Image (cartoon, rainbow, N blue to C red):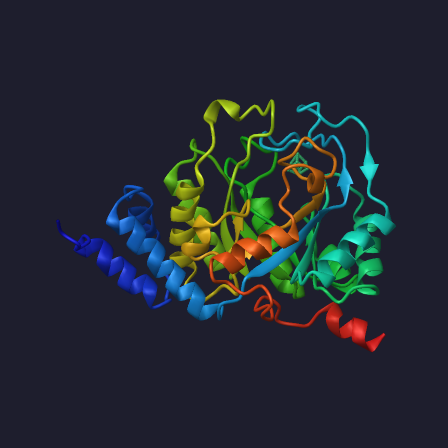
Length: 344
Ligand code: SF4
């Protein structure tokens, strides 16, 4: 039995292992590897090695708080929070007290960021108010996950205490969503123009997605210098119109996490995967999203009581895989509201 891997793949992995990034063509070659081949395990080993070195062993946890539940008229096919899915009929805004309770829990449990998610038509003013409220109460950096925005709105997010924003050009954009990749990319440029960090994930990956489309989004993340950009698979909520496609496995996701890690090279401060699982922590990922509140993957109002994985469990999985969640975060260029909180 030979222990050697194909010389062509070995060359790509050598290049990726130097952290300079790999080309679109090279990434496509890696995406097409047989899942159980030696080459795939060598790929994951390379991605794991550079992440452990570059992220200094840190396990990151960015705590997702979905601050409202509402049947969204944009009807993205993969989302449970839509008019079409018919799961949620009533509008629910989690109260400031509830959001603050979650935020304090996350802070005391060692979360590295709070990601505040809204549905597509949620009031931007209310999101700003929530940011201002949290900025004065917790020191954990705030990240907004909301609709497309312009420069003025980007500046207002900064003023309200947000240091970054999660935003993704979705797979199937324009077909599974009513949005365009161009509009999303304009918003991503707004972030860098106004000084908000851009957080990204290649998502929501399903078996029906073409490898070229997936790799193009990895390359986009490198080009726009995402703070992090790993891979999230699509979760089919009960009754989802995407059920006919099935879902990719955690192992398939780990292979993509590894490819995206090599594409990102020395750009990222962390590498995410969702939902939390062990395999990708051996393939270059170090960042999880524990979840409470609304979730586009859940039929429950509070995903903390549904399929959302809690902070303690995320930390436990990371510790088991040799990532230390208690080390300082590598993600934030500025201390954000940590500084403002101390000054208050
Ligand atoms: S993903 Fe966002 S914009 Fe699309 S339907 Fe769900 S909440 Fe609305």
